[in-house]
Length: 366
Image (cartoon, rainbow, N blue to C red; front, side, top):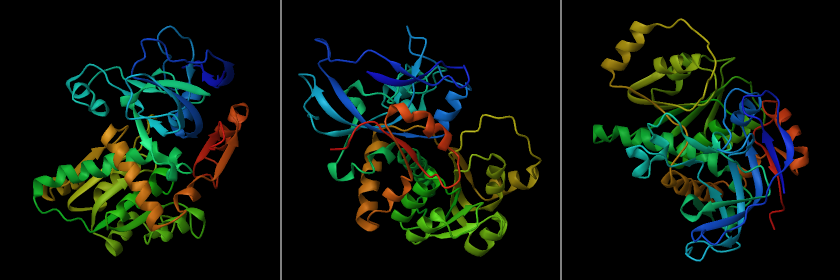
């Protein structure tokens, strides 16, 4: 079968390769064979293809890319009762390691120095035709969500971060956030706005581009407001629409994290979702930020990857979104690439103007 692979740490090494087609063996009693339907691409895939990080599975010199997979079950092992052929599924990206957090079902909080993630590090990904995974590592997606199932994995990053904010603030006993800001209007930023609106918050999305354009229209369709930072600074936005009880940062531009610290209200939580691998340096008002966090009982927390409960909560979020704003999530899927052979085109799309979510249509949904 075909797969898109890279030689990790070798820049621009992505290629279409023939790889062995996985089958359920006699010992795969809890195994599930999945036909890949769609795979979303993001900055992580682009960075791995640029040779910035990644590692192949043991015994291989290549890594199959893709961690935002969506597929349909074709075969199950004899001990699998929770899934059946024809079910739509998404695989949990990170596999359990050896830390105490891994052992209690929280591999996303692992303290292991080495982690295992589909399409990223030490485990093959989903830019291929079929894969085999254990049933407990697959999340059922209702057939009614199949058009947007490929958005499930990025939604989990949002769900985990926002859920952790609420978990942390249980210390306050009566924390009732009313106003939130989302920094960035890309895929993750838009999904964050969706989840926060589903929780009933007044949401302001701040992004660079001036509206109207598709992203700003999507924000406003949620009943949120869109603010261009070319016209209004973050400090001005906080004065006009804050104080912000929760800020979700999803820009990929690390200096904004420090600006967000200054815009956060008392008893607020700043959630950082950007993975920034550069060496950018900025000058910050460290005394003022430190004082504000100490006297204001503020919190800053990061979110990356997710556990099963985040995946299941994200299924519910997408279903609620479809019920409340029919077709909204589908509009995020702006650029489709048909087939694995055209996958290099998808890499070119990443980060291009007008692209919210690029994805590869590996097989037909029907």
